[in-house]
Length: 150
Image (tube, rainbow, N blue to C red; front, side, top):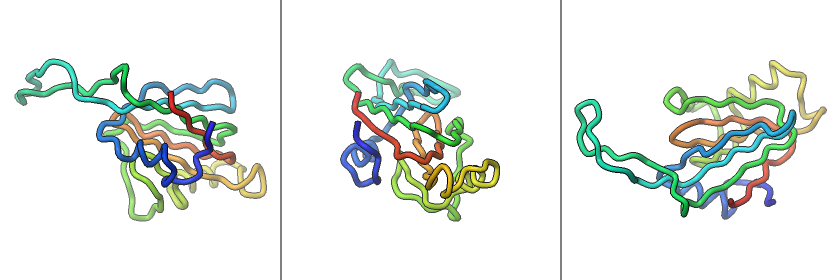
């Protein structure tokens, strides 16, 4: 499984070009492993009227949708936020778009202040963020994330 080194690598570059990323599954498979599966959504379904707006269509996962799994081994902390409540700040520094890697962030500060994890032990902490039309998933871990196509 390829390591997520930076946002310029092919898999991350492809995802960051998607128009409608969707969360497929968030699964903590063990005490120290988190898996997040996302896919490229497409406009589908029948047009409908919702709250006085006509012609709305859903964004859906299709069987042909490109999908990726992110594995975060030995994470320190993670948070899942419903996307409408997520916010960005000019005080945070990151690379990427839908998939981000932070060098400074409020979540990384929170983890450093609320846990005993540090660069000394268990090692250098990295903040990854996955943004979809459904969720924002923030993960701080001390091992690089791995990514693979589904």
